[in-house]
Length: 324
Length: 306
Image (cartoon, rainbow over all chains, first blue to last red; front, top):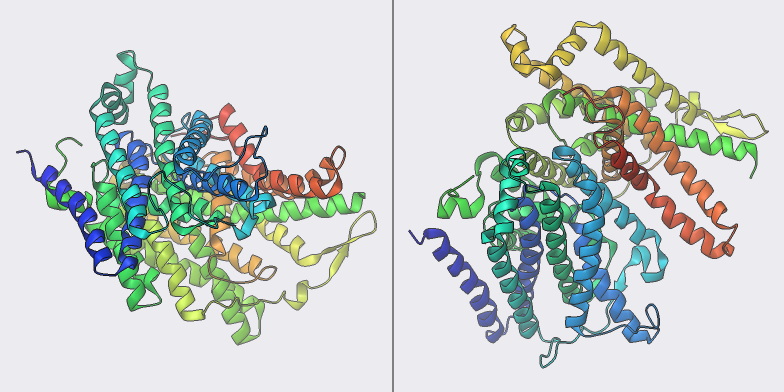
């Protein structure tokens, strides 16, 4: 059966593309922005899904990478705006492609450093250590005044992409959608590769992996670094969407939300993060329209999902994963 | 820098550490016995603080408020355990994280619903107002000393409870083999509820006591919760002794770092920059401490025998 999940995934991908385009031509640019938000959060969660879903590494600190991506965009843009050189006489930039590359490298380096220490531990220790490292960066961002400190850093004009008017909602959505698509393809390629097989094996049976000569620590570290890179790029996109970066992008609430997106959609499933992000953002929007107390009801719904709907929405629709 | 100022900061660090211990003791007990990671522990701290502030304002007595905070936090803990947490013991940590994250949203927004967004204030009881002299000529707040005293008393009390009483014996037995004590006729479900309520009461006590020196507001529990995680990771998850030592270590390191680092930086930086850089590094210091401890001992200083 080629199978329910593939068809379902294709339908989700098409819907996420078609609805914003339709909304744009119906003169409802707000919905395009909402869809952009979904695409960006999906990309961040696809990154986390690599570590969490495939590798079983429950990182409660992915906001660190999201925020680092955001601050990369903000800092580079602010230097380009003011004309001050950034470091070693290098100027800032307003080119998204350069920003993404720098965000990816910065996110990767920080993920490497955090992973180096955190991956020595496992289970609940790993959850708390990744959380603590993210908090460390969060407090640093708050108390370091050069880039806005607690107040955050505005990006006055959205950064540029060659040949595209990024200031308009639909073209910017399409950029984010394209990056999400690349992210999903890479996720699929990684999951099906030898590396992906080894990574999933470390989740299922670490001792057996070690006994056939594959060092689990290195596999996990590599996965954690790649995961951080994905999420950092999403952070850069998010900063450009809001034209604003603040320490809230680094807060532990965001780390929690990314985990929530994955569990809502389905852990380790290719489109789990996308479905989760779509549900989460729409729920937030819908509840926020009905009541000021939407967080209360969001909490109740999440609680219901954990207690009663295991396997997430993708699991509910496409059936259980073939291998646990 | 005088000796008196140094001593005052050291006591502040100790007071902060003792408060963290009250939070960390509950967390580590719940993890040690039930294997549950409880993010909503900070919400129970908040419940304690609100109960104390409201009841103290209504009755005019801080002490009645303090009793109310213990009762309210324990009751909230017991209810949450019976309704939600109980279903999570057999689940993996991921489900526990998500469910207790949802509980935080419910608690925070629920509290804001009832009490509004404006912080409540709680006065220090008259008995504990005033200061005591410190060697070196300065004076120190009596109330903060009282918090240190309460923390030490709770630590001793917990030690006696766990080593000397029947309940403590069951808790220790539950840590090492839950199926066996179930087979021996101990009502494990009730034991878990009691342990959870006990941890909640300690968090509520911490919230109520801190409420008198800070403002009582929604979200007050979250920074403390994360520090309590750092504490139990440093101390070794499941170990009360580790929680005590970790808490004092974190409390003193954090307070002294914020106090000393900016001054130390002045030795080789201009004062304005020294303050900024010193302050930024000080805010990260405890996480660096944690990283060093874990790099040397991945299971914390006092790993519980698993």
